[in-house]
Length: 281
Ligand code: SAM
Image (cartoon, rainbow, N blue to C red; front, side, top):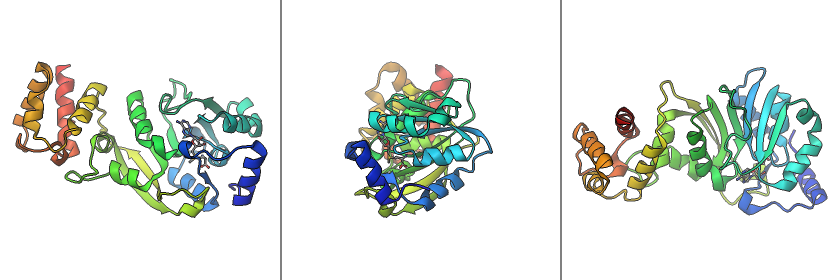
């Protein structure tokens, strides 16, 4: 069971810790949501799970109880120290590996390179969710599934449709690799302190034939989206010779005219661009 609101404040008082807004420290206090996260994750009897921001350790404990080896990464020194005290046994048994670091820099914590089969389950600090997801893509070892608590707007942005103002580069990268298989609204009252934004618990599953863009192509698409209302043909002409040639040949083979705007092009068409770059690299 997670700590109740009063147990949470008592523990925070004992630690001399005021929840830090800039670190998204909104702790889960609702047992049903913790339960729901585990249910959605549908984990094997034993396996490896990466958790971002264990905080007071509510989700961590539940994952350990579910037989998982947990690789957690926490930036807050004091919270990490508390978990080291409360979870000494799991740490000594090698069931919990807690890394004090910025998850954007170390998106999978200290997950050993040898482990390729793993899941991510996390109540994310909302400020880093997009940057962290980009970093996960950068690792080029994608988890089979992710169960994430995120800000509702971030979920809507990632899964935005082409032609909408929310549609952006990360929507393209993620939707070429993952399917959004579950999405549940979560009340602000499920956290302490209650956040000022709405939350969603989602599950994303790695797609059959997931396509991972190279970091060069991701940088190019991100750059193109900074001018999302400009015509693709003229954006292509501003690129260096190599990029320009590939972009123009991509447009030539496309059913979308070169007068199209980046925001009108669907993810599968961007994937074709990624593939084109991969063949010439
Ligand atoms: N997992 C806990 C829970 O569900 O109650 C806490 C979740 S709280 C929303 C986010 C946690 O992420 C906090 O513990 C915070 O300190 C941590 N955090 C914030 N920014 C971080 C970063 N860049 N890297 C790692 N952890 C971070």
